Length: 216
Length: 330
Picture 1 (cartoon, one colour):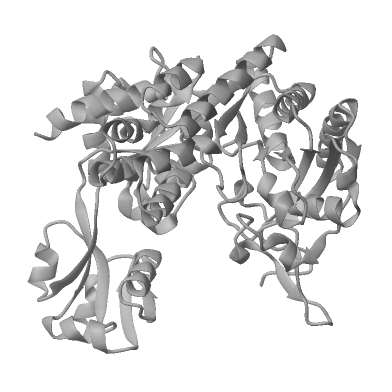
Picture 2 (cartoon, helix red, strand yellow; picture 1 turned 180 degrees about the vertical axis):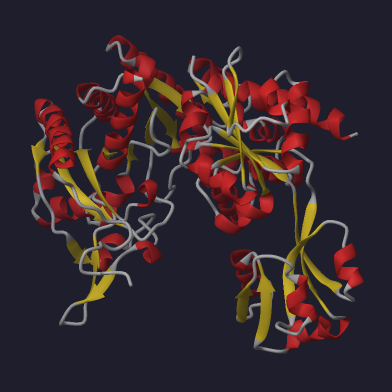
């Protein structure tokens, strides 16, 4: 039997995912060994392999088929539009993608034509401003602490991921509009979905069954 | 500094002797299989007027390499080989001698980062059968035998029927706008969005259940038998029977083990009109073969002729064969 390989996003999402996987009998002892320097973790008995990657790279590994299954944030899926099966909303890691800025910019968004926007998500931002407001904007790509762009006056507003909103509040920024809600998704490679169909469908069905209990 | 004199642009590559031999042997084996089935080789130009590709359901214009000739006409490097074959059949009056069996090998060009492992120039070998009654079986049989001939044994052809989805939308009487959205979700394989949409729109309960569990309708004949329970419209049921009938005929040929059904596969509705086919194997994350029935396309070129065909993605096959060999050795 071939291995089923999972790409997990480093950090909290990985441990939430493994909690959920353990409940449906997908386990990996090697992953629990915090001292391990390994990059790939194997469960020889059930033929599973796991590796941890930067969250935004998960979908690349899955698209190219070096991982069969991945756990990716909906934000990265929306941004990159990869060729993948998006099969399940895992229900955790829920955040919002919002437009934020100083209160004074609220009307500014709708009325002023040359708006400057900072974001990690240029495609989502472009889609939103074009599809919803029919507006051309200038996008400034930032890679982290996007709020800073608005605070220091680099841009008019920002488009960013918000979980609790406390960073925004602390910097006197308001949510001006919500673009969408995002959460962790189970993605599957195109070919794996066909070739390892029975095992993958079982995983999807098992996760579906426990999902609701898990979240309560 | 990047030295443009030495490097090649994104998405194209050299074939040094070792690679070239592998590629040309592969193409030779595929073409020899086509010739055994009495197909004739043809060749069409590398670039054509853009109008050839502007019909229904062809490649999106942003994915085409375009340029303007001295007369001011827009030309494009061919992104797809099937429309040029239709044009060739129409322009050279070949449609008079049906059934018509044509095959070809050629390079195609697409600006698409997410396509073919990011290659922008890639080679396809394909075959088209026009004006024949038992076309589907012949084409599937030939596709399977071509893949066996080149040394693959662990591969799958997934098939579906366009009419099945058309029947589904008619029975659920959903709006045109919703159909387009649903198609988009299915083409993107976004099953989460499909099931969310199914829950939110007003459609028969059975169809709702079907769409929410669409991932489960990928498999063997039991999947098709099961799907019958969810529909009452004749179009969908006929399409499902058609799939079962094809399976039975391939069983007689002893090649049913390579066939699977995938009812979530809808292809491009405007281009394909019946069966759609996609081939997969280990060692590559992309499909190795794509095809289907496309009666509408011939109509665009002025002749109402039934047509079905497929093309094999040579670069993906090379990658798959290489990776599968490595696995065997290790």
